[in-house]
Image 1 (cartoon, rainbow, N blue to C red):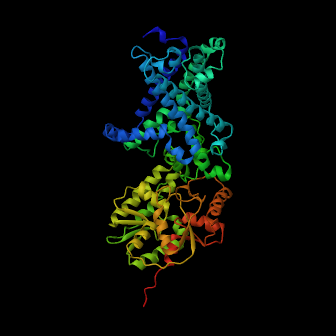
Image 2: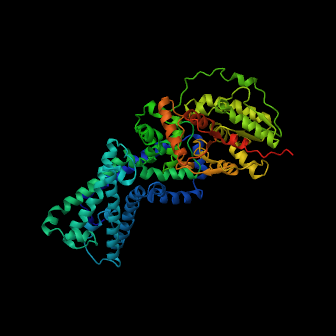
Image 3: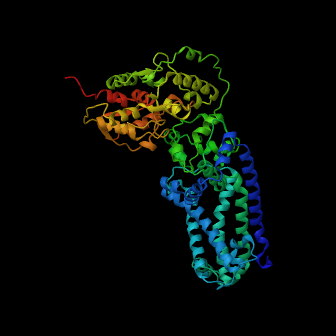
Length: 595
């Protein structure tokens, strides 16, 4: 290596790179060793699969172009993209530029400090184009830095209500990141003053300086630039910016089929460090928008786990409504991680479920199983409507939890009682298998999600809105249609939890006029009465519910429809306005088949 391409000022940069590589290697190796047996098997079987190509594509669109962030917030997406993709382009084009100018014997840092070490001009064909291109890219990055500074001063400038709070390493990394590119601009401009090797931007700025000023401060400026880079690299593994290297790993693991389990593992560590702390989840959270609680959202929950300072109250104070999961641009399994941190063992359930042993499985060959769920029993209009519907279409059924309410186990799971929930699932699964039925229908979205995702049943599971939609589609349930305006509230567990949006709307369109609300489908608001939060007081739940009610009533509907007994109960307590489950609405629109 030619000593021409070395100066002591490159040492902070080089040391920072070495420290970064060592720390990241240690962290990733330790985390991978903590993967559970199933996760390891999945990785071993799929490590060389074609899914790797898909992972590269997603890493490019999400880690560099920030497609999902842009979809949520155009200006915020531009800010992230200009810094991430712009810096990537500076590295790539800089490497090309240095390779063309110095084909061999060049150090790794030459592309970073190219203008200082290669001050000549006309060294290769196309040099002028690349010089101007580098200036254009630098300007692109600086526009993102400008937005980042504005966001920190006034977050509303980029369309979010409040910026995230940072730990000390975040602040070091953030300040150094803000300094990197202005210092690069200054350094290259000062060098351009002396040797006229700048592009349209750096040369124009360089022409403003005198030669004596450039002589006195050029080396100082390049040294500060190197220090800013080195500081950022050293702080990065301990800061929010660890997501830069971690998110591509997480995308790859997801692509090959790795996912979170009920207990924390090494994969969880990757998820914790893949959070960029963009703060989008704060604005999404009803606790923030309606109650002004701004310290329990997923961004802080994950941060506190990572730095081992999580308070149990923060883990418990969450509605589990999945609005943050829906809006998270990284796609983190936020609800699952929160359940991990609620894990409890102290609940004594010895013989608590013994009554299930006395329940005999009904011979349901040729029948369907109807599982109402605990909350449906507290809103009996729903179960009565489903009975009428089964009778109307001549469907034989076994009402599995008719006489004694049988819990699906999900409420226990949400509160961290994993062992007890597992016991309930085991007993319920045995009853279902013994029945011989091939279809289970439930009216409760909480039960539906549990049966679909947590039970691994050998039979098909439907929510009653899916079942009703199927009956209508197959012309087995003739219905009348009126002109009443109905607004539909998407329950959290059914919508964001299971992706059921189309079927409930199809059913309602078959009987009445469906009107849209501002917040619906994946952006639907929580009713506030779910079983996920054990910290909120009743008056706080009511504030969240009232905000949701106001959203639904803005279009002046005749009826509020929902597909969740919990939501129906919450709304019914708030007003005398007609609130109906979809099954109840359908049961009032039967075609009279009498002669």
